[in-house]
Image (cartoon, rainbow, N blue to C red; front, side, top):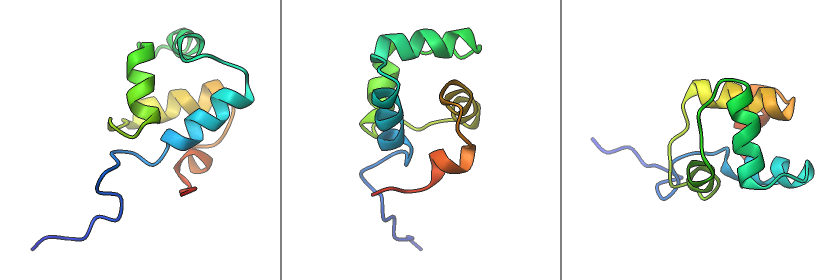
Length: 82
């Protein structure tokens, strides 16, 4: 049985939040990648682009790293803003 997927074209729900938080903090994607590397998450600009555009799944470890870098809760990142 197929279940309806409301976000079939999107592979994550945090991409829009990441864009907003990155812009809030005045960071480029490259600068964000650098901050993520400082907290132990090896991620480059291209991966961030794919996350922000919803073309890549995001792991729980990555959500934790984003929350730490942006100083927000996991729940804040996972709240849908569409």
